[in-house]
Length: 114
Length: 116
Picture (cartoon, chains in turn red, yellow):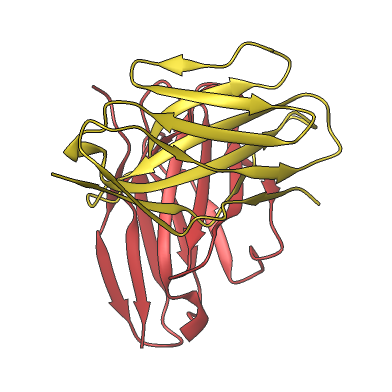
């Protein structure tokens, strides 16, 4: 069964460092998303991406964040200068339609900023 | 603003019994989608069941069914014949039909333990 894969599963980084979280969406999907979940809090939408550009982003997704689909298969989330409050689980998802149908999620990357 | 509320942080059920997880939401829209996702210890979010708001019939998927009460903005999940593998976090999520983009709004989740 096709699946969304995320790497790494866990990343520890020092405050102020740049991190890149990687995702390989399902191959025929066209819509891509990043969500995050701070421990004990709700899963929060960060950004949606379609046709090589951002479709929508949340207030959380400020200038420190960027997304890219560099090679047609990977979908990356970059945090330029990490803060302690960026520590969270980051989930990538993809779907074949903009809404309604199932969004397939990866297993998440646990980011710990120290 | 749309919100999703899951009022039961933790629940437990005996194997083979039935359990119902609650979810309420708030929206001014009339057409939208609702989902229940399961997150087992492997952490992957797995879709359990989906409901389209314009459909009056409650969705069912094998042992999983929903009680969708649109007027009350309630979307509960019933798990029948609970199995040990059902032990997981369960998240209720709302997908607006406004605009062209999916943006799931999530509840806090309910941790379900199925006991042998």
